[in-house]
Length: 303
Ligand code: PSU
Ligand code: MN
Image (cartoon, rainbow, N blue to C red; front, side):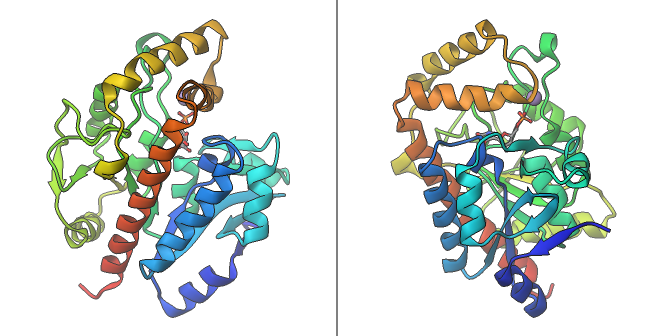
């Protein structure tokens, strides 16, 4: 049996068949500094409630899988040191040994599926890292999208990744990549990019219908919705390119590998932009939460 706990509001939402949106916790523990991380975590949950759905932030705490955290738990996690970063490979061991860990996109999708939650909002997904032809560093998030039926709303992929290779792997793995309201695949801090997204949809109802149809066709896996950052929060990619290159070089020089790579790069970029990247990050996560709530509400309607 899985040691599992549902927050009070998620328990109520499940009983009433209300729309629920999953949220990850690695963005809180490894993606942003304190106290902005807890402020964002609370704000995003409230955005989801304001949009008429219920938030479920996922985490493993002392060996229990939490589907939804109360404010105390959220605040504890945001300030805890040495929290594990859980992907598909780590989740069972963490729960079985009574550990505490934050869920990445992959682990959050697994938790969502266990709880019967179909929609998940985050900032950026993991992907194929630059230089992956040597390092083989490809996030387990991509393979999770290929096998777990959750629609993930993100703002595209950060330029710390090789975005073209990331799109190729998603195509190979049969993951629909849907740009929201535009043709271009958004580049996280910027709305546009030179890359065209394979699919485009202009409203939440279409995304919900496509999610449902994949289930009817018996296709495993989820969908990636790439939602461009709001125009007023955008940072031009030319400004960030040299900063990302510096972060990358620092990471190599420091010999960072494995699951430490993404948190290291994110932290370096926050430092090098003196927090400017953080403001954009917050705006896009909130924007993704609102769209995810709309999709969850659409999925809740009788087809
Ligand atoms: N990209 C971001 N912010 C993040 C992450 C990625 O822009 O917080 C986190 C997510 O939790 C994602 C994880 O699932 O990093 C990917 O880590 P890795 O590349 O080690 O698979
Ligand atoms: Mn990796």
